[in-house]
Length: 143
Image (cartoon, rainbow, N blue to C red; front, side, top):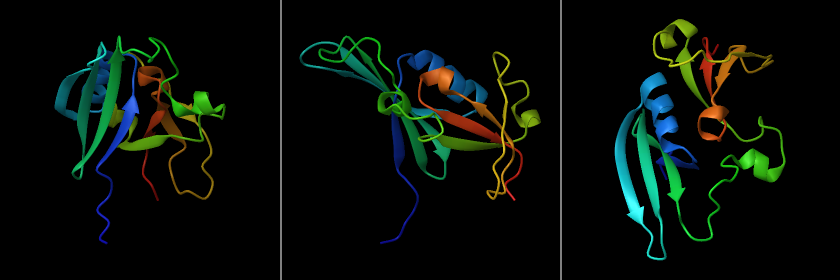
């Protein structure tokens, strides 16, 4: 079997518009699919996919009024499992803070941390507050 990367990553969000503002407006990912799925028992699901490059997608699903799905829940896997936020996450390369200049709608918090042995930058911008799932934007070059 030839490995070609992943097809898509599917995540949940409680606020798809805020998620779209971040992934499209800040990161510059183009939305490629935006569908609303009507649930027979009631409510609907809105599903939005972004092209993250290389033929790969990231999708977000927002439930609205769907029976047996709470209106509010922890959309990130870490909280549900009771583990620290560093356990399950993904990161996008941004190059530098200058590369993001002028794209953010609000100041972005920068975390400085040591990544010994990874050859990576010591700065990242968490986006857990955007869609309740944990992602980060890595700044600097991977060595």
